[in-house]
Length: 501
RNA sequence: GGGCGCAUAGCUCAGUGGUAGAGCAUCUGCCUUUUAAGCAGAGGGUCGGUGGUUCGAAACCACCUGCGCUCACCA
Image (cartoon, rainbow, N blue to C red; front, side, top):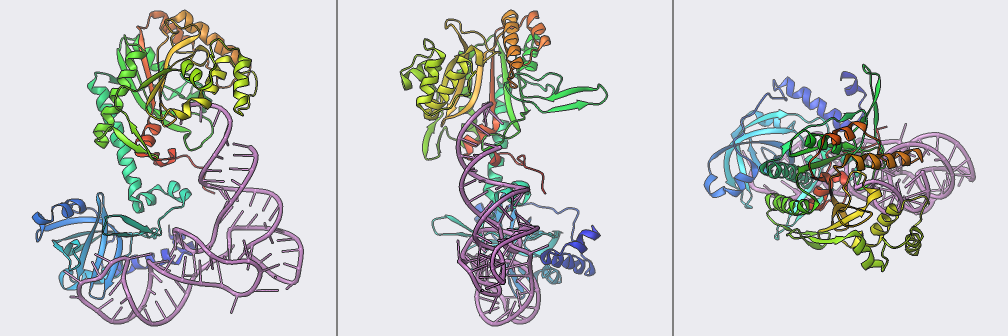
């Protein structure tokens, strides 16, 4: 520490260390142990009539100082916003000399009475001042002006995205709307949990470290267990363990947890992300569609008090029922092509027409999915369930009860983005074994995202799993949608970054 | 991984070959209802790094590093 101080040539920081010493000389401990807070900025501003002249005790970080000799105005920020504090030497006494050594960023506690200044700002007239924490690093200064229409204008906003993500603590201090997004995220998750709990489903925890990964098509992170001397994989999905629990007699389980996929990062992908997976016995995917509608509406109402959102300039209504269309029909509508009757080369021709390059070797199902993504998906603006996917794409979903070559699966789309994935779960152990074997072949052929063969999971199904509906919702993406954030990094507090230097 | 772009003071940014700049922040002085407080003054820079072109480079060129956007893959 001593070294750091000496080596740090930054004069702003050095200056603050000097102030720290001066405070010590004055006998002031600049890192207090506690402070009794009884009011918050927003309460004081919202209840001025009641509180005028009454004593309050507030604490927060100094965001602006206006010194005028023997009196000063300070804006402090607490958990709910900013409030102005008026400090006068006559009122606070000797500590006013210590106040001279305070900076923007320091955390103080103030007791005093509520009043309104000449210019009409509700403020706290301080009678005592406590220094709670001295800040040694200058925060990026932003200045705010609120015009007559209540519009906030921010000057010199802290905008460097890299710094904002790396030093999220600074981002949260100076960009209040960032904090709001994460408060919303927290509320969305707890609302979802409440909804699932109230429907009688049991929240469980399954292994993050798995000897065999599965439940999705993705490349895993690999680690090693020293005592067992075996490789372990960080889970890419919870699915297979949760279904084992359905076998075990739970008839509704869910897990909200991190999954890890060792793949590229972009606006919609972070290597670790949060997933909610739900499995309900004796239900099928039709039932699950209604359940998703209900759950999303409940959360929206709970957290935002509305079910219609303006997102990216478009009005989106989550009110049930959502539009439903089969994948095959939706493609036919857009392209005129019946992909079930068409051959692989017909589909490739259709893709080429749209300038989509094909590597070669894709299964027909994969080609159908490609065509869907190019032609249909971007236009699914209002909430839509797309149903019945090619069997090759879904080795864990149950074959469609009437449609050959398809499985009972749906994905929910909003604004062209996938927000959930669900199916009637495959509970036929013989079929499951065959699907795994087909995936095994794909691994041998070099597909590093194909599903591993999980013998124990087949064994579990052999004991008998009731008909089951399963659902996965990417929490990060749901939050992005509901809070209008364009990047997954804006809904993850500490997104993955390259190591610093 | 490919393409495009960015990197100058703590923050936000000007500066296209000739003395390193502005606003805010910081420091000194004045100021007991200010509010992007004000007035007077001051300090603060390895112009991301390395090499090259040039009499001379923050600027032009090459490479490197980091970041952003975008395409491909994925949720």
